[in-house]
Length: 119
Image 1 (tube, rainbow, N blue to C red):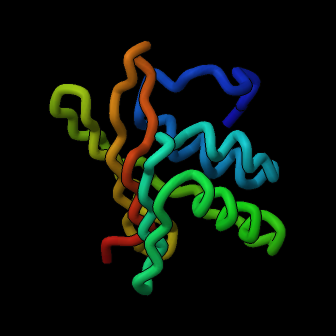
Image 2 (image 1 turned 60 degrees about the vertical axis):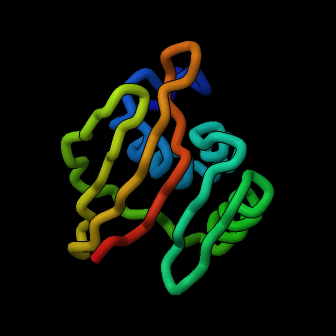
């Protein structure tokens, strides 16, 4: 995915996951953070819940520093209800992610909930 758009707003919630992976591979923690609302929650699995940008940023800084790369998976069709969208991705190992994005006042989308695996 080409991220030449920089940090322009994301107007399709199904673009959030590919952008997250692309930015993570590029080591762009600020770009990763730009995809989340300030009070977002991430379920990393194993009872590890991250709440808010400070906790999420710390986690992504550690991930990028470790050299671990997120896998690009098969984006599933989003399910929309008003200003909410449920997105998901089937990863190469068979795990499925699930995310809830909310439409912002300018029409862009940001994640409010991200669960890394629902299997």
